[in-house]
Image (cartoon, rainbow, N blue to C red; front, side):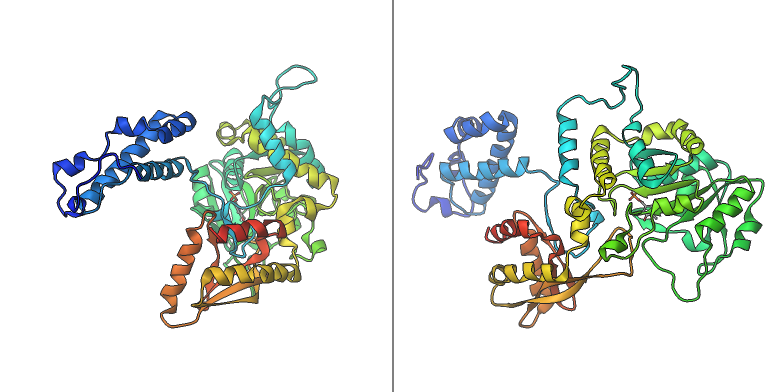
Length: 478
Ligand SMILES: *Cc1c(COP(=O)(O)O)cnc(C)c1O
């Protein structure tokens, strides 16, 4: 190792570095002039490499002050390379989702189909006919890229797309019921999480909330009594993330539609997740479909793009043409509109549904949801040795049955039969040992996120497909 300046014997270990030993550190210019830095500069530019070099020098100075030795030049080179890598590393990092929740909001919800990913990449690379009618050469409407597909799939007359389902609800309320009353069952005043609370959204839209019935039981006569001159909208929200069970009653869509229409008021449904196909055909719990709500008489139905649909984040509004037109004319629509990236991904995803061909193979979200327990168990068994080695002797690592959930509020009670690697500490002070293991898993190049329960860490392998196993093993070995 060639030191930039060799420290005299014993000097470097002194606890108070004098000016001379601090001066042994190279100047920033000298450090940046070294070949290793020249190469980094050619890739990342001088500003960033200089920042890393300054950080490396500051750290070396601190170490000297603490009684350490002056670093060799190669050591500083290595430190700078590491710091450059950290500075350019994306904050939006990939993770292994072994939580058992498939549509995990904190981990990015739905995984997109290959066709959708390709469509997004193409739309990013070049110009696209986003609001341009190629046939006439005139101006187009970005909603038209997907409205036809949405109408075909749901049976709606018209459709529009905004940033997410929360935006769809806000915009619908504002466009149709600002300064008017919106009648909703008391049992549906939901909070979705992340500050989406139905009463707050109503306030933000300028609508007056009129809650009817009770938490567990609401009847048609409750709605009838509340409908009047000032009513702008009858609203139904799918109670997606909780369930009211026991002595309950609610008014179904067709009845609500009849009551609303008798007073000349539109009826809107916030479905939340909203699947486009009947999931029961794949052995999954049945989630309400927009086409069913529309067929039952709903004038508008809203749902998310990145929940069970398995597409990009978006809020889809389908329904009556005159109402969708009113919604699109509201200035708020412009503020909530989606980009070409969203539309590219959504169009490609909807085309898969329109073909109705081999959906679980082509839609990753459906592929994950429909994986059999046997298949997941096999993944667990193949990964057990690597994980046992990673965890070390202090842990038992076994394959155990568990239950996954769909996530994002879809079917909160239902569980999907799954399997996990259950990692339990052998000795005492289990909590801390387990926390340390979790921290090690999070510190991997691709962090591994599991779930703790009953004093063990559960790595549900539902979302780790056989094609990802090699990468998972390689990641553990880092
Ligand atoms: C998830 C959900 C929303 C919010 O959807 P985002 O797309 O996350 O904005 C609204 N309503 C219901 C019933 C939901 O389940």
